[in-house]
Image (spheres, protein in one colour):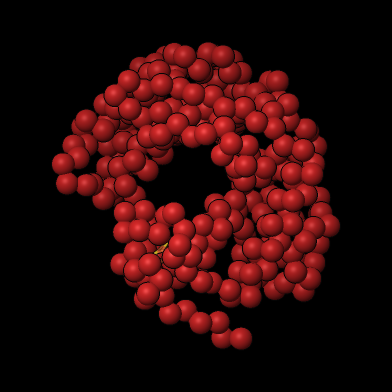
Length: 273
Ligand code: SF4
């Protein structure tokens, strides 16, 4: 795998050794205090049932495409469902179940979502790359920007799979930093410019549905992304963490570190320099 270095923004003389990802970038932008709890202190809350369901559906989709990469054919639906249920049953003990949630019912929902995806979407996709890891290195900086692209089709379309209880807006997809990171990663690692980026959303509701959003990124978008990435990585290295208590995710329901922070009132980190 060939790697290049790129003349981008991160601070000259940076001494960090860690890797950075688009998840870390989005986390910092959402609330730097969340970043501090999660990535500096290493605190982790148990996954919700929604998170575990999404991971299990994603793993089953990935399993099918890995096999399809070799054979050119989708697996039988029963194989994919078996893979999903085994994964679900293995993971369900780690979940923080809400009162009233019934694991069996959640699993059935996942099976219906997967059935829909496997019969409606999978036959239209021929993968050439599955779970493609990328690493972007920068001059004068030991931080490596890493990521994984779900899938690239034979038509050079980047495809990402999501599960969600709500259908996102097209505007949010057009601004999504993950799409820009994928575009950067593919261009950097494979010297290929994608034909577009598709997000296949499997919507979790009574009657699950699949909604595809397509977007694109230009070199200017990537350059702006790299500037932002550099600014955030520099802030992290400088130890700049503060609570974004006015953000839309700052609530007992939405923030996994609410008990530690209470909307910024208990956040007491102070930079040492
Ligand atoms: S409670 Fe609010 S300010 Fe504190 S970490 Fe969570 S989102 Fe950030």
